[in-house]
Image 1 (cartoon, rainbow, N blue to C red):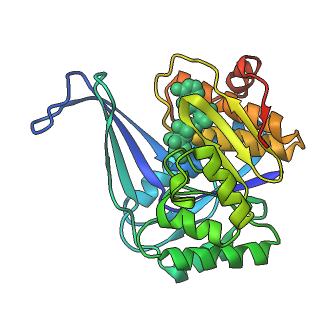
Image 2 (cartoon, helix red, strand yellow):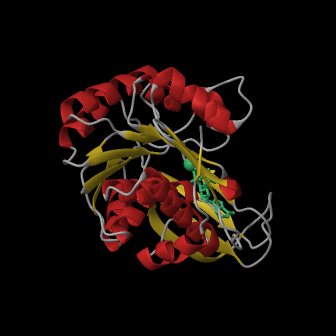
Length: 303
Ligand SMILES: Nc1ncnc2c1ncn2[C@@H]1O[C@H](COP(=O)(O)OP(=O)(O)OP(=O)(O)O)[C@@H](O)[C@H]1O
Ligand SMILES: [Mg+2]
């Protein structure tokens, strides 16, 4: 099975390692800078490929950073259609000093308007469409909802969407195949329901859109025609950033192999834990994902 991983707001990620604690208002000298082709869809694509799937990536690129992004993409052995738009592909600076949480500084991204999204849709290869991350400026939530509906009609298959805020609400209203909120994002889908799993049930009952709900170190749940919860194994978490992307990729890969939902959820939880343990970023091998699987408890059925 082929997957098409769309990162609407692709980024040149720069992890800046400082050799001294960060000076919040002073000069910070960088000891080592590591650049990569970033964005949540890129993480999903890397994990899908590590598991053996055929993967294409897509999104928008602009300005001088477009060439940098494409060179980094090639280094990772990934490719796919990127639509040129106006402005500048963003840089995301992740400042790491070994003292607490990294500091992130993210550019807004280029301008991608409805006509650019139409060009993106027209050039997407065949395959299971997965759209991950925030959107660059230029598209309203209503326009995003229309884009999702049109793409589903044209491709004969609804996309999977992992985004946040009003765009997540719009994706659910458009009736996508699956959404992957975390414990903070689910609140937007069911305001007034404090418990995240109850909120996922409420959202599914109201909209018919299945919810893959991630709960950080607590684990993850799937709420759809069937429901299951899988607790996360205890790991020495170095950095869980992108664990949600890893979980989604492994869940989709296993589902495409016709694994039962509860087992696909377990593989997702294994991938999320492996990523948290190894330091984030979604650079996992198949062995690392499967190595965690025996440590993942059986799923419990949600009524
Ligand atoms: N500290 C941890 N220990 C073990 N497993 C973890 C840990 N943190 C996350 N996970 C696993 O990864 C999954 C996804 O994590 P989380 O809920 O933080 O996703 P997220 O907020 O969408 O992350 P991101 O958007 O950065 O990809 C969790 O459901 C869990 O299975
Ligand atoms: Mg997430």
